[in-house]
Length: 369
Image 1 (cartoon, rainbow, N blue to C red):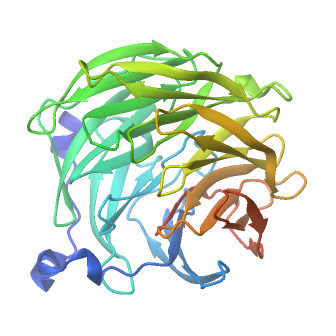
Image 2: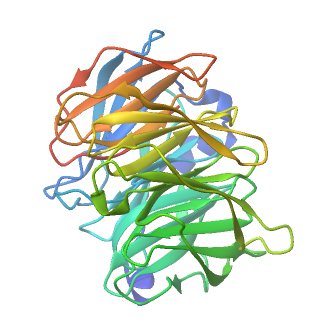
């Protein structure tokens, strides 16, 4: 906690501009966000989304922190708040997390705060509660409360993962109801979960063995069903996806519904679920493809298309996000430094749109509204 106490909060005076009185309707939608992750100074990159799903570069804004200059091996480096009013970005090199207010047309930096550990790689939010996972040194999760764009540490919220080092976390995320906090661990093949308690603290951790090797990215749908990608160490054609539900008696207990459903692709790492909760799309880094899954109400999943969309030979898709209207899927490609755009049809099928080029070579994270 000394790191949290010794690091000052960067406040840009937005509270005095009356942002607290604004409502989610004041927030500009139709945008896609990623981060440069540059060591010389991390930046938030903002693209406007046109009605046909094409993207136009809009602005780049300093985060007030430093990136790692290399891939983070994570999902959730850039995350929108549930109400769409704020956006959070990890600064892996400077061990901090930045908050942007999205009121109006231009995001505005409101705070930069120490992440509570070393090398933050993923951040999540639910109803004003923000948690970060740090994978450097002694890995941990740490919680904050968002007050009008200013993060404040939640006392006693810093807890370890399944082991002090070597867990290699990939993502942190809240369940749809906010009662459960989950971290995937690539190094242990575990899902580590915590129960969120009154005041924003957590209890745990509780570990669940992944039925597929190398659990990586995940997403909850609106029915609180959890889908997790399993990269299987990058073994060619071996990737899988598993689904879970949360036990009624224990918010931290994950119960497997569909174990290790294959997509026959390589290095399935990132996943996004449509707002209606029916379809999940998996970015396969090693195959430069996107697979699609159907999600039943009880959490059962079935592979719809092994290759629902292609991102280009050798493009290495590395992040995925779906627009808030559920009509467009965006994929950040880690080796071609591009953004792929796909139209999502009513039956869950995809059709490719125009590719957006010019991303920084060190870019990480993806979010869309």
